[in-house]
Amino acid sequence: MVALAIINAGIREKILNGWIGGKASLVLSGITLSFFIFGLVWLMIPFLNLRTPTPYLLVGLFWALLTLAFEFGFGHFVMKKPFAEIAQVFNIFKGNLMLLVILVTALSPYLAAVLRGLLR
Image (tube, rainbow, N blue to C red; front, top):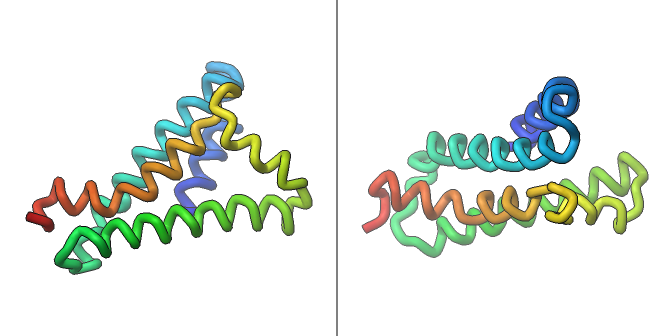
């Protein structure tokens, strides 16, 4: 998922910003990353081989927490940004859809399992 996020951000920064502008590219980037994450989960979910809904929900929650930890940890300790600046990735009024990405990350295992018929 981290690799997908990095590739997605690279496409946004190198291509989309010049074509459609910063705010629009940020919105499109959030939507595409959400689709990429769900697609990856869709492909990988059968390998979890879980039988009940709760573990799928817990896996999604764990992935969402890891995403948040990476976002804040990498941003603060590697990029040396203050937490207040990092938190701006959750500002939907600036076009950032990181909240959508976190929600999709959290719910994708369960939704993919249901849609693939792994849960009844």
